[in-house]
Length: 176
Length: 184
Image (cartoon, chains in turn green, orange):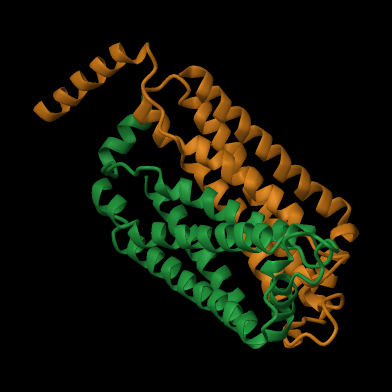
C-alpha cells in the first residue's frame, strides 16, 4: 500500500532529523554533553571503591576523541536515514520487490544507530564504564528510548511491502 | 485469523480513545499542558548558560499557536484511528487482500501519532528546545510511552492478514466476476 510506503519514508526522515539535530547541538553546544562523556569515562561518580575502576579513562584527549567519534557516528546516521528516505521515495511506485531492495540504506542506518545507542551507550558506557552506578551521569534511560524507537521503526520498515494494486483491483477488493 | 482482525480493531479503538480523550482534556483543561508548552518553548528551565538559548520563543501568541497545532493534530489522529477501526470492521470478513486494503486510515493514524510524539515532542521539543535539560518540564518519558504504543500497534496492524477459512468460496466468485469483466 502506498500509505505504508509513505509512512516508512516519514519515519526515516524523522530519525534523520533527530540524528542531525543531536549532532548539530553536540557541535554547537559542545560543553553540555562533553561533561557527560568526561564523567562516564573517568568513572568519577560510580560507587566508591568498586572493583572496576581500572577501566577509568582520565586522559582528556581520549574524552575528546570518544565524544568526536559519537558525534561523527550521529552525522553518518543522519545522512544514512536521509538517503534511506530519498531512496524509498524514488521507488515509491515500483514493485514490492524493488521497494524492498531500496531499504538497504535505511536498514544500515538503523543497525548503526542500534550499535551506537545499545552497544556504545548501554554495553560500553553502561556496563564497561559502570555508568549504571552513577546517580547524576547515567544515560541509560534516554539511550533505551532511542534504540527502542530505532528498533521499532526498523521492524516496521523491514516488514515486506507487496506490489501496489492498480486502481481497478483496489476498488474491487474494497467492495468484497 | 478472525481473532487477529478483532485484535487490530480493538487496538485501533483503544488508541482512538486515547487521542480523543487527550484532545478533549487539552481543550477543556487548557491550562495544564499550556504551562508545559510555555516552559518548553521559552526554554526557561534548561541548563543555565547553554549555547542553544537563541532558539527560545517568548511570544505568548506563538505558544498558543504551537499548542493549538498539537491539539489539532491529536484530534485528527483520534479521528483517523476511529475511522481506521470502522474501515477494518467493515472489511472484517473480507479476503486477506481486502482487509489489507482497509488499513489505510489506521496506518495514516499511526504515522501521524508518531510524528506528533516523536518528531514534535522528542526532536523539536526534546532536542531543538532542549527540553531534555529541564528537570521539571521534560515530557520525554511520557512522549516515549505514547509513541511506543503507537509504533507497537502499527507494527502489529501492518502485519499481513491472510484469507479467513471461509474466504475461498468468495474468492472463487470474485475470480469469475473478474473473468466476466475481461470478456465484456
